[in-house]
Length: 254
Image (tube, rainbow, N blue to C red):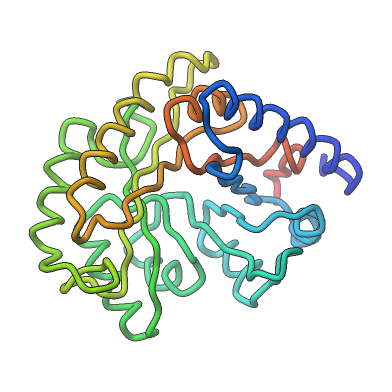
């Protein structure tokens, strides 16, 4: 059942307290963690309520749903434009639509997808932020780069990217910003079980950020959801993805 505006306000306050406490324990600023409101399967009215409560970033799993809600620009309470994050796997035939509607795609896992996104963004004269999804928990049901192949994938991408441009992009992908990595914690119901895969992701992200060049902006870690956000923040997450705890239960029948 969808939360009312007042219920959303109460749940947001509780969530913010958790985020702030986790940041304090980790010795980090609250501003170092972006809250992405996962609005999948929630109606446009719920998005409007979230914006009224100060939301600036929304995550959608399906490109079609992202188009319905975010094709037209929406303004956040602080005057900035609301950002749309595509956080689910994107089929090759949906990459063009995803590139057009999204400000950031979290789930890239192939060179082919990178090349196609560059072509689309060049035609649109648009710069797109992308993150690379790693199946750090090594679960068969999860998408993303194999944990044992992720470093080699990024090293190959670095070679293909060519020289860095003055604005920290790359010669061969000038319309893309490689922003970091994304993973989904282990589906065990125990937050601590995800610590090792979160730590692995951070180590990999830090290694390539230090290289600079095409990875000059590689400072983002999208990891942590309602059940494991404290562990994710302790391990360096810069973006947590929360849906049901903010919006209420989803109506999957729709």
